Image (cartoon, rainbow, N blue to C red; front, side, top):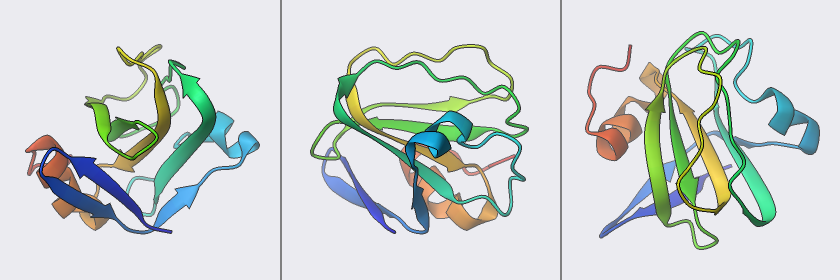
Length: 117
């Protein structure tokens, strides 16, 4: 599937996004290889400030927290093996984007980062 993220004056399309089941939300990017990994969409029925972690994620990834209209609330590059990452505000959706060649363009636009390693 595709997710369109609204960032101020522009829309950013993220292609090849995997919408996660309840079980998938518990696993996320853990134990995956960076280059073959799709972006992950976590959707919630009501706003939450759920914390995430990057245990057993062996690469950096972009975390983008969204409201119910896909507007960016917060975004961050997450390093491997962090115990807790908590957004400042409540969110409805979270997109985790691996820093890999597949999403190089999107990472550069969202995070102003051209080196994805």
